[in-house]
Image (tube, rainbow, N blue to C red; front, side, top):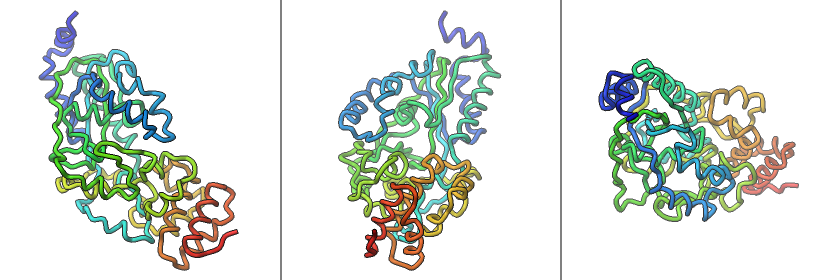
Length: 362
């Protein structure tokens, strides 16, 4: 049976009419845009394979392990014909200043992680979108993803017309910049696809030049092993010593390549209260955060993306930040309190930080 005729029989709508409704429902659910992509990702295979061959994925072995699933959405969810790609703005500020990165005594937490974890919020909204579709067309095959499975989300979003993959590997939208989250609804509905977005970075390479650790080996080529987001979130062990000083006060993620991007002058403010900063994570002193107990960490990161790295890595990251901070009594006292921490990982980074301040360690 022709799938389009089957859809028409169930929905009493043609696919174009259904897509109009889906866009309306998505907007009502708080998504700023939804696009439709087919599942042919063959054009992205050479880039992914070269990235993996160069070991730019570092310790993220799951990138290699699930390579085939990333390139074949129908293997990840059998029956998939189309991918509904959605985006949701998350920035609460139009400010693009790099000034917070010069406040060396203050911890810099990436904007996306200051509020509640976006994964659950967007997944719930995608589920509600699926339920609205089901109410219209009857049962249909679908599965929602929010950075939770082997999905080439930026490639699919580009195919769906939500933006282009910029030189900083972020998805950039001409009308909204790049401060937004992505989510996907894999579906067996034969919806019409949107035209892919074209690239508009031109000759600009501000993002490549500003990277503190020089993680970009070229346009669209990120060596994750040098990326501060990787070092502070994905890396489980010791942060390479030569990369610690360039990290500055960045303790969870890094926004430099977005802060410098000229397209972010078109940023739209989020109206989602869940994205508002919690526990002063947008303005806290490094020394204050470093003295959180394990219990305080668990309590104050409940429902936060930060919790996934665990208390040990949190202290490791903060120790590096403190090592880069101005030499003050609060900084030295905080480091001294953790100098003999039970974790060898924490101790090693604390001792490095103390040496940065001219303090001899045992």
